[in-house]
Length: 80
Image 1 (cartoon, helix red, strand yellow):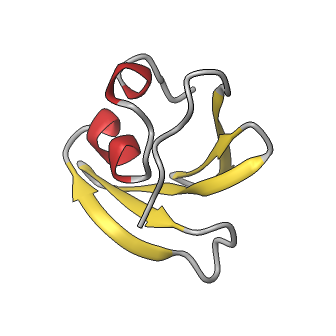
Image 2: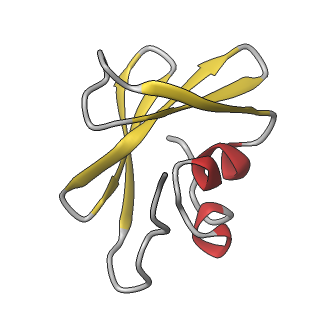
Image 3: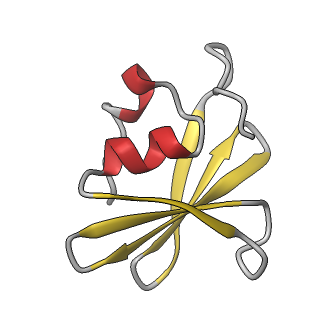
């Protein structure tokens, strides 16, 4: 089970590998997003080697929501 991101703590998304991004709430790693073609795969967990797939989405926002990022916040995140 995941907990939604609190309104007071920022969400950070940083590239950690080819087509893979780490999602953090403050200093806590919420999980990872891996892009496979047109699909964003949400992986929950603080260690990329042990993270568990929790969703596949066609949009980044939905992939982030699967990790507990609030909808309004997820809609503003862009990958660089």
